[in-house]
Image (tube, rainbow, N blue to C red; front, side, top):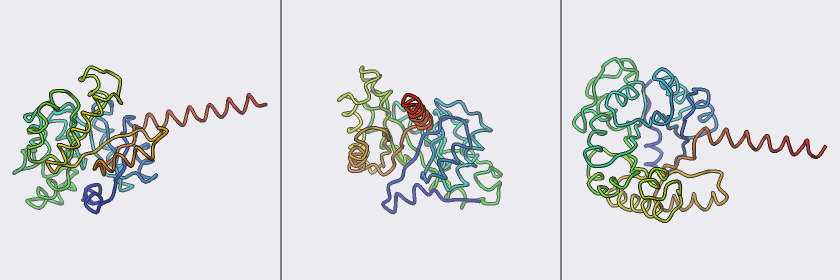
Length: 264
């Protein structure tokens, strides 16, 4: 059944939406994220290793609980086409360098007149052909969001030109890769990285493009930092990876068990 992009609609209503990166190839973990009330899931096809069949099932799992499914996919038209035909409601393209990269991402993600996405009339995203014609193309261009990651010095240099490309719905940074590109590898909170992130936010705001930011929900000053991100203009916030959530629970549980044994 065709579903509108709930993330886009909630942001239009002034709400802040929260998501998690899904790196572990597991439809069950996606279902749990939806059951717990997250707004969206970002299926990581960049660092994750899920195959296409598993990605399709992860998208199905997201839809069960009204969890908007995004896929982070390298700037490859065939892979982007595959996950969109499966029903992804958004694409996140990492490692953008310049306006040409941005245009290529738009070409792969949007139908004409914005792009040149291949049209298969019986795809799952069109309810296997039940929703067709001009109405389907217009719906897809409006509901399928495209996000670009600005995470290297070349992209920072070309940022204004990148943001002029029509068809971009939001941009985001990438502190790990930014730290490498800026010569402070591994220092995600280095002033150079924060300065770069702030520049992305300011330039996107001037261009009228939304910014999506990420944060660690387990950090000591979580509430304060969350307010900072919202004040910066981000209404779309990703709270880490499924790996980090599971790892934290494992560690905390084991610590409690060992503490209990030590007290015996």
